[in-house]
Image (cartoon, rainbow over all chains, first blue to last red; front, top):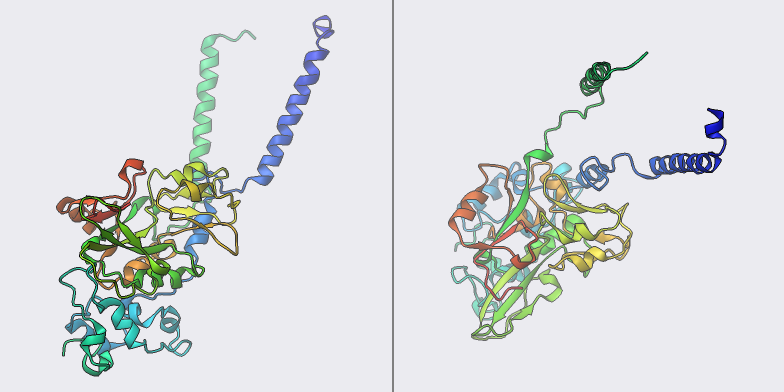
Length: 152
Length: 247
């Protein structure tokens, strides 16, 4: 036995070095690579929870109509039935959580209506469009059209 | 003791039984995540966009910007206005400020014109995730391409790899940012901010794994296309009646 190992020093030394190196690599790897890395693929699975935890700013129209009955009924009867409340009134999740925390501002009618209804050949032909400069003679849109149900 | 091949198999078999019993025990008693209402394996998200319904109002762009605190001058979704001369000339494409305030009064022309809303296509085989050197960007098990901000180096490989120009370097964090398909909303049963606020339902969030989702009817009954199909990215944003001039 001893005789066969006598000249094996040059094999044992690199072998020990290799094992030590491997151990060091494994220790560093365990310390550096995040725990959830590789659960689903080559990424940190814990980030999915981070992404999910972001705050919501738009409450959604189902939440709005659960309180604002009058506006909801009016909107449902007209052409704006499928236009979400927050598309005009802006993000209101904070208002939905606590109505006193954020009071929604009334939108500026002149810019708001024109964004959708200003005439543009790129818009679908069936979509109601007007040249605002010629249409109302300077009157505000909501002098004639009620925004929740714009039919005259 | 002399070990025969038979002994070896016997011992190996016992070890295997023990190991599998141990594994099963770990599965039963182990720290399994609490049952959640949202299961990633049950969803495969995408979007359908009807070009013929888009009016270029920019509601989607504003909604996205508010919902995700997108820095000014950067866009996760935007709307392009195309004007196409006859006979496949170069189209004239405009998108002032990503159409966040809609489009100004157009100059009257006789050209064919239409709007094209754009966003991350959440490709199933996305070039952007393939080039990331650190595994910061990835396709989630429910089919959404996300960027892990804490892992991103800001090397911009993915910004260059995306054929649709959907990624940008966030000016403050200096990490890559992009559309998350409102991952914080869709995993809670809401639709994305852009789809919620589209006044004409030109864009709709869809779940390909839901057999009752209108997407199946939509894909069967319409002529649909994806952007740059030649890139073979398996994009999951389907456009109805997309003109060949759109790039």
